Image (cartoon, rainbow, N blue to C red; front, side, top):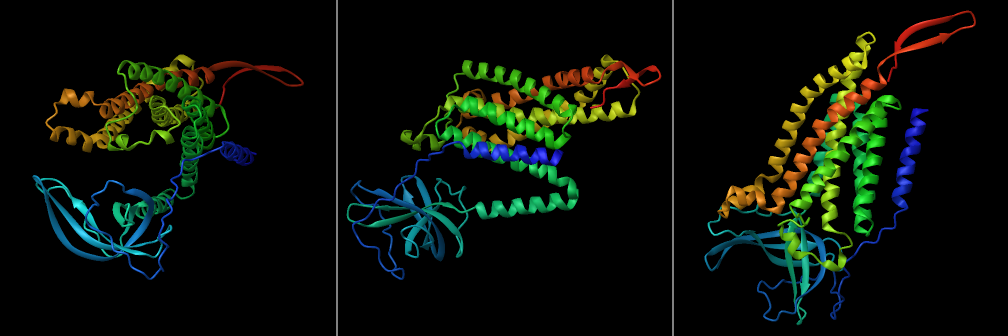
Length: 414
């Protein structure tokens, strides 16, 4: 019966995903006046930028490096840039199978300390193809294709997970898959299509919380404790975070270079609402893990102990929760520091003081999210412990038979 219910929930989730009309903005390819040459023809890329500023984007494609040349140095003012001449073959799009020669810029600082890896034959790259008014085509390497290696790491992760945990790995992996699907298909696509970020965030959080609790602890009252404790702590911590985000006047657009390149015609959402979404999702995972861990420990104590008043059970829950809080907070702090370490040093390199760095929106937004998650962890302990203790308190019950009525005590097992 439990498996059937899980399958029904999953089907309902996917139906809900498919029912959201999604319309993404796509970049149309600009038709060119010249005919597409045969696949065997090689087109050379000019290394200098045309004088006229009439270059237009034709397409973006994936390419593979088929030849590598020498490393060259280009002097611009006081900056020495290092470039590598390469020949690439386009793998998809309207220029598929055509070859181009271009320069790959992999160093751009004045002292040559920071540089990318040199490209090798067989490396795949993402390229941008542009065309000027004279019909000259220029290919620029935008990035290195890395998704293959990420997929390989995921495979190693799943393999290690399965070897260590065996069949017990099925539930955690299923939870991860559901979380990813819910966030991507409901939250991301829904917000990008123009739906309310706040409503979609709450819907996503409820779906993840409900299904994750059902799979992890089962269809019982422990799941109800986890859901109530998590939702209550998320609600309180999110309200606090939203208030301080408003007081801090966070706009949601960080000091990233991508913010400069935004095309407002393709934006159907408000960046301020994304702050709310980020805070809720971050707090959801943290508070849910805390609630599940605490309920599991309290349940173990309850199974080994005779019936006790709810006050004593609540006190035990607080003691167990206090030890969990320290571990969780350490995890949050370390994750926050690691995620912001690079940008922190970039600000330091520009001789910006610590106080001014904290005022940067990139740092401030992450700090508020981390602190809100920490508050959620702290308040989830008393809330979850209280709900569990009240539902598991000592009760006097009457068991009726055909002959007599017996008074006894038992615990309300979760």
